[in-house]
Amino acid sequence: MNKAKYKTWIRTKRIIIFSVLTAISLLLALLSFLNLLFLLFIIPGFTFGYILLIIGVSKFRLSKFGGDYQSKIHNLIASRVDGERILDVGCGSAHLLSIIAKQNPESELVGIDYWGDNWEYSKELCINNFKAENIKNKVEFRKATASNLPDDIGMFDCVVSCFTFHEVQDVNDKTISICEALKHLRKGGKFIFIDVFQDPKYYPEPEEIDTAIKSKNGIITDRISLSKMMDLPFPLNHKKVLGYAEMITGRIGDC
Image (cartoon, rainbow, N blue to C red; front, side):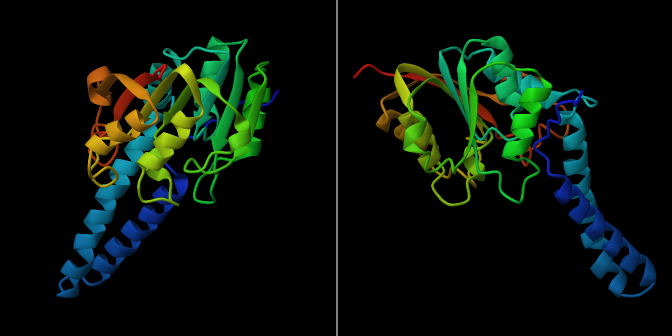
């Protein structure tokens, strides 16, 4: 029987790229030893090597062999989910949605993702993972961008998203995707979002997150840094990894 193949958020391609850059820089530094060119190559060599260390150890920490922190974060979201129809915006390899399915076996599920070439996810991978897990929920996987969700997916009792909004490439304003997700929530429906909401690179005006949520009649019930919800080890606590991560939860108001 096939086993589910869930991918981490760290792309293998990035590890390969920085491994090659580190190796080339250090090799050139070695070849130019006792030459002024040595510094020209050794500095980027150590820089690429440090980035490789951060990426490689992060991938290990997120995997089941290094603490399974990706599953722990997904469980933080799944434990708050309920409802008859549940939407996951940016479902990746469907790991979060599979946890939600097991905890809500009667719920109807929809997973949306763009599954771009830059990622190791695909719609086929999601379908195969659900089959491997023998999940019986009614589920649909759709390809779409989070900034413009299909109208025909309908309305939901709960919408979740995990580290997706900042990755949306077709809009500069990352709050657009937040609004799109909230647009598909019924009155009283629950939203549970985790993203790097504290990162000024993606959210230069933090108050605009609140404004976007309020514009869709959303009411924030909780907002807390991921590092306060769990003890993140190095390098997951690094600002360039999950150090800026925050969970925002709430509901859609009645008015």
